[in-house]
Image (cartoon, rainbow, N blue to C red):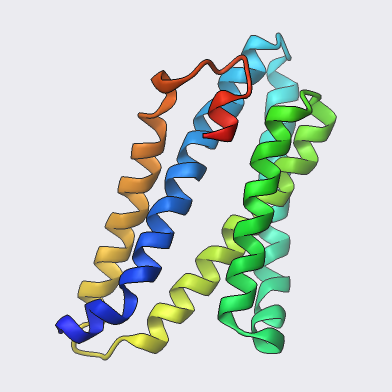
Length: 163
């Protein structure tokens, strides 16, 4: 059991860090959108960009994993997610944010796929439930933890996007 935990420890830490950043972004984007006086429709369209990217990734990412492997795809997706978040802080335009949110949705969906298939390969039937439970707890704690980081900066400037 401990050997299984040790083999996925770095993956769980990576997942936690990814979800902290994603949870923070998911909170800051709508808050910043309201601060920019964008309409409810505009904010909804930005959110739709995320969903479109998420859906496209469900089809495309498995092909990438088969071609180049889990590690390379995960690295590329985390890089895309980081870039999309940073660009939201640098370019404050709702049209650009639709694209950036689509990229973030693509990256998160693909990351979920890679992480879960990677976990599935590493665990045994005896501890599968426990490790997937730990994974889900990690994602929820990361997402919530990211949202609690909002008071560390001002949503109307770039600090929270960089954090």
